[in-house]
Length: 504
Image 1 (cartoon, rainbow, N blue to C red):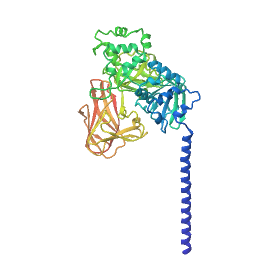
Image 2: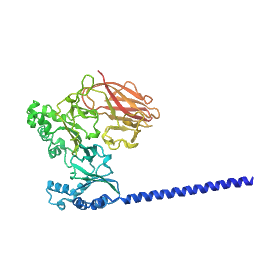
Image 3: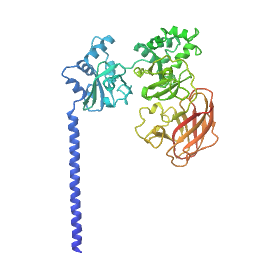
Image 4: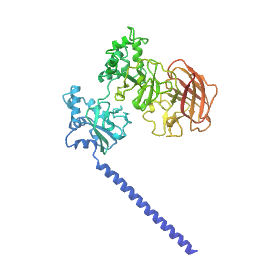
């Protein structure tokens, strides 16, 4: 018996010793990994150091501008940024355009704004860039957009103008991309921005004649809320291809009367028809019907061939390419302080679309555009304009990455307490629809009354039903609608999307 106890003791001692040895090896490995990480970071220069060590001095003027700012020290330290460094010729050209004699003559605040406009708050290599805005903002708080020209990655432009002539210099604090021109800070609304671009002269003249120039310069409402637009606009080249050489000739073609500022005037309606509510970059456009400020609708169909505007189809549902308008993919995502501007390939005359099936994803709202697909997180009740609620303080946004959800995400719009949730839908073309709602990830039992624009649905909602039928509703006007859920029995409810199916 004594020998057996001694044997077990020896075994335990050896196991303990092996455990200590493995722990020591593991710790040593961690130390080596940490040392290796530090060594690899030390291998790279900061973006400032990389530009300062350029053998040809290509960045001398740009470095002078950074040194004149308040950010030289910050950009020469550790971090994870995307830097756009401008070559001397580009800086000199910018000074000439602005009328500045040299960098020293620029105001300090403007110099700071310039430097911040070339620094994105996350690092992006060129092969991770997609057409449209980068995933994070500049230090100024605005987005830079990427345009793929002919040649793909070999012909990338930032904000339509600045060509990346040398991409992907790996730095200890991010990536440095060399560009040929300065990226001008955004400082004006849509009307002034189109004037500065120089290619939307006729359309801009029509905007002025319709009395809408001030509208397109608005930054906030009287209540202090931000004002945002998306414009589909014809370039002068497109108008001239149809024999229209001025806004006056456009008014004549539209048979507009003399009072262009009247909402009933044909020119005024034409301009309003080109202005949509909300700011949408190209990567946020989808097959959908969008509401204009004239309370009319523009239909967009996204295909591999591009973005078709008010598309025409044959009797078999095939797209008629020669009869359909297109957005010009090489002239999209022009930015102003309050709008995104996309150029059209043909003149867009008024078109009254028929109702179609709409899948309205409740999580496809502007406030989540930069946050979606990043996992699960809480959203304050008043943080999203189209979500309202009472009875609790937060909604839970959930991204599953699958499980049959529309766009892979949903929102926990009710929890274990009584309360109500309101959702303002995407704009819907006037007509009669059968409406259904899809839920997922049900928790404890929920029973709720459902209202559409204040009209109570005939039967309450039970969370055991994955798809709930709200009934048939007729909408007399184009626009959004309000769907309200009032809890009768508390519990968790995960809302995915609403479906609007036209009733013949």
